[in-house]
Image (tube, rainbow, N blue to C red; front, side):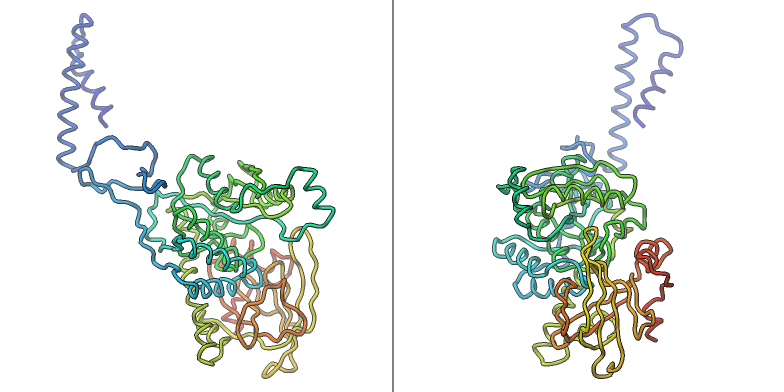
Length: 459
């Protein structure tokens, strides 16, 4: 606005023409005097502080305890409002950490990583005095930067031949113990941003605690939500995909110190394939980070309240055990879900293909379900089911297999023949759109089945 005023003022004052440079100088002096007067009027009228910003970026940043925290003008002279960082929930005790990981593992639907690893990370944070917290999305400013760290790669132990190849490549001494934090830092560096909030890509025994651990180590907060409302096998199934949000650039850091950046990819599937290819050279997991988005964009895509839900779910299961009540029933009530089946694992069929664990679990019914069968097809997580060979609950809704007596979730890696289990279902409404069913419905996995919401099947 002031630039326009300058141009108009110059045109008015020089309308009759000017003779020399001295007159030009007088015109500019008078013009700047009037602009200065106008600036003072604007300041008094709007009460906006025109003091130069200590940082040129938007959002503006203020150095606090070694990390830059965003702050925004609030209309009062020389006064700024910082990002709201009061935690809506936090994990302060070992018991809360155990409850949280238990709930996360349940929502992993047979995948989501090993909960013992996730719990170990959080217990280390507590022991070393780091704050584990998350905030409601309403506390994240629209202009604040958020991102999503995740793991990519194989968890299979290296064979003797693999160890030999690693030695030949010089992959002997580890440089980074925590690759997720370094992936976040590389994303900040590449994008020229300061991340203020972390959003887990999914729920699971390690894939939720690990991002919270990274946030704690960096003095950041997590958001009370995730990008799936469950665990998913493909990064291209995360909810930002439903809103056409960019996954790239992706930064990748392995434990040896190798750092790579995927600047862009033609689609989400290619981005994931490239990420997996990078991880093969690491002979293990890479820490990667992507979905760098503003707070406003994040709020469009996030599944709300899931971290708090996991904490409450784990606590409900534990309390039922302590009281001698049914942990399975407590879990069903805590998630407003359904008990789908009780039985024993009669058969386990699986294969490792293309970096995923595929297979089918067959269950034979007990108690009220005696004489009936239940089958679940999985790709890392549980996706398609049949009851008495008739199509039943499918993704995007949730099916979790738990120990019958304790309601302890069992990952598909650890489920074995002879286990006595309960199968619990829960609806997942975020994906109930045409695009959502394209990426996480039965047809996405190659099954010619029509998706039916779980509540309609169980009326």
